[in-house]
Amino acid sequence: MLLLLTGTPGTGKSTLSKLLVKKLSGKLVKINQLVEEKNLYMGLHPEKRYLEVDLNALKKEIKRIVTKSPKKDFWVIVEGHLSHYISNANLVLVLRANPHVLEERLRSRGWTDAKIRENLEAEALDVCTWEAFHIHGDIVQELDTSTLSPEEAVKIILKIINGKTSFSVGEVDFSEYLES
Figure 1: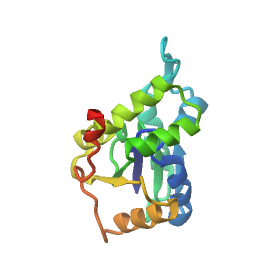
Figure 2: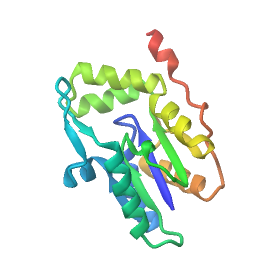
Figure 3: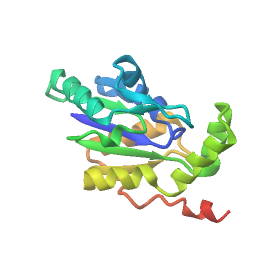
Figure 4: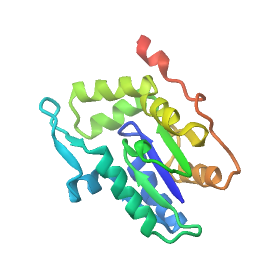
């Protein structure tokens, strides 16, 4: 079983994926770490100074990992803001956060104003959600983590996985942030 955990930086992907993998007894794949370890990039972006990921190589590596995993009731959780580009998922979960909350989280990481602004705009415009839904359709769920503790969010995600609740795309809307 393949769970893709995506979202704008600061929405809780890393924190929640660590908790989820323990609850599901699965395997956690951190995209950023995998990209660096396996050299799955084409180079460094000249202006923004981040690694330009080779998506085809990344997809092949994830497919290899999933294929090697035990089949029955074993979850491979792929965490990262590019995870929604991976194919053949059973569930795609887009984590969201109110841009005001997100700003605090990103500032606490010491990010530059320009990088924060870019990510807040991406969150307000639903970039990860739109891309994920465009690629995966109805298997995409969207969860607002703004006011949830990690433990509360994990409980909700487990209910989503077990089919006891759902959070369809389009329920979360932060577009009013763009007006401020």
